[in-house]
Image 1: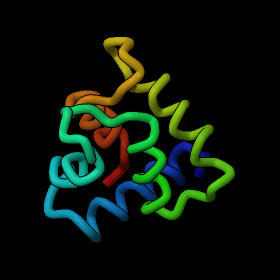
Image 2: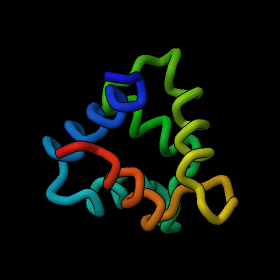
Image 3: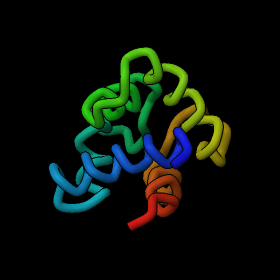
Image 4: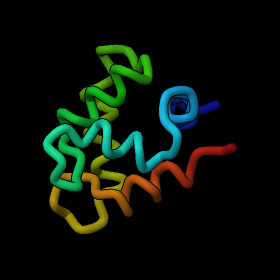
Length: 89
């Protein structure tokens, strides 16, 4: 399992165990309710998913780089769904 797969699996476990739906998870971590996850909000999601502190900053940057399709340096719901879709059930 690659590091990316491991991280996505931890995110999936967090979402499955603590939220009814991925959208509820997105809404929970979107603390300012603007419909987008900032790097700080993503770092909190990673912390709750038990991603090590050393990796959180790097991973949040890579998630934004990999899934931010409109170039605003944020992750909106559609981009979040695309990231979640990569997770193996």
